[in-house]
Length: 212
Image (cartoon, rainbow, N blue to C red; front, side, top):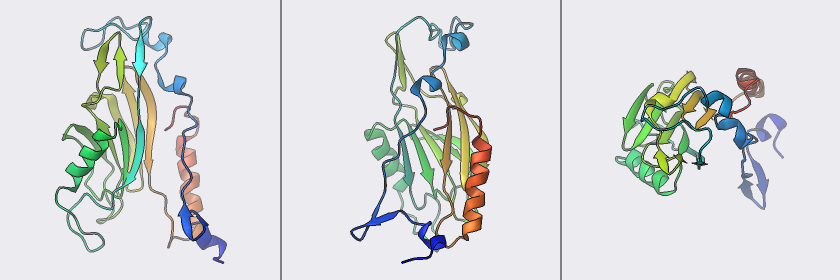
């Protein structure tokens, strides 16, 4: 029988175990695909292909989230394991994940292309926290008239970044959405602070219909 301010920090408990409900986005898939109105003015893309409208387009984008504990150097709170980033990249690629949200990366701020993934990092806070968005550049996210499309660095723009929240605008040729990677304050943090964090996040994302 925990007090409310503590109980709210944890998922539900059933038969002595934590129960994590499956999370599904409420975003209408149609809202993250460019419409004819937004693409009809463009006859060709950078690769010389036809624009999306008026031809066959197949899109398959798999989102996932992963608290990795650390991808940074060795620290007091979590031991860095050499090769962990490469192992995770391999696992994520094998699972067919297109866009991966990473929490507790504990990595520096920046954008880079590594091991077949575009990585955008929000930066850590004195060696803790840190969010990242990974985009697989070797798995096509869409096919236009039989031609595969792959993510490029220019498809992503970070519009907000702090150790707990990374907001990235995706404007790929056949995919437009706002991806949020977040790590909410939980146990050990005052309830008022937690409430304020969620309120701030809701305010930051208000009015955006295509948030994942």
